Image (cartoon, rainbow, N blue to C red; front, side, top):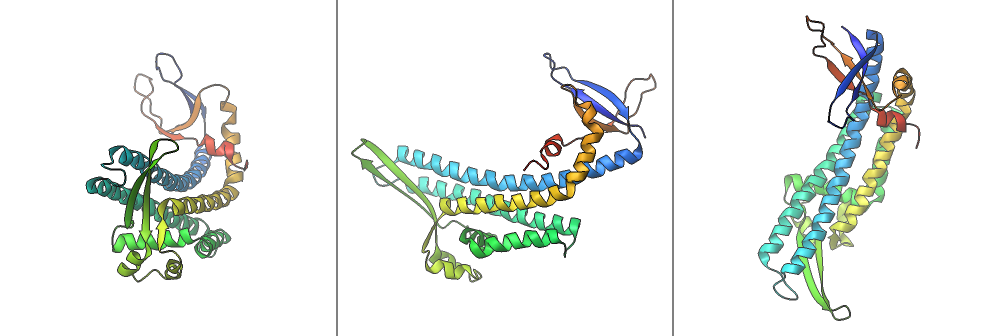
Length: 291
């Protein structure tokens, strides 16, 4: 099997793409590089799941802001809007919130599974992760509320219980102002579900829970857990990533992007045939150890 380092150039004005084949590498070198890249990709997959949570958060907030503006513009009176309009906001808010809850569960479950498989169930790395998530469960209402809310939404009903909109005329600025609230009624959640555990005690002092407020807190928690995951993976990958960087850094002398080509086949006439590629994760390699 022929294996080579190669470079691709795609910065030509006419959109031309050129591939240049360079160093031939041994199977042993290839296996080492491939193994390191797979480990980096494993971390990057967790990073992507964290970004899903952040993006779902942003979608909810942006939707509520946009809806508040539209409801104000379409208001039939100074203090009310049509029932159908509110129902549309209620429906879409719940759809987006379900995406958010699912992305949190997926991020947390995948993180724990990857740490367990990579380091072992009694490893310091997995214990560190569990300590961080336990800290947030014990100290953040948003974390334990969303943790339980996901189960509620999966088995009982739509997570968001209420959408409210009010508008009023501001004489000082001569404008109508609107206020859209997406919130949970603790009494409704308690009536339909009896497995809230420690969150039941929280509900006593929180008859209504504003979605926007706890979204901010929960997404902050997820970012902190993401930092924990990055520290764990970087510690295990820093030496390997530096080794990989040394193997390919001599190729970074121009605008071409290096990659690995293997199963390189040549046509009977000597022209280049098919080959398989592996991208080199330069962004991770260049950033590791900087934070």
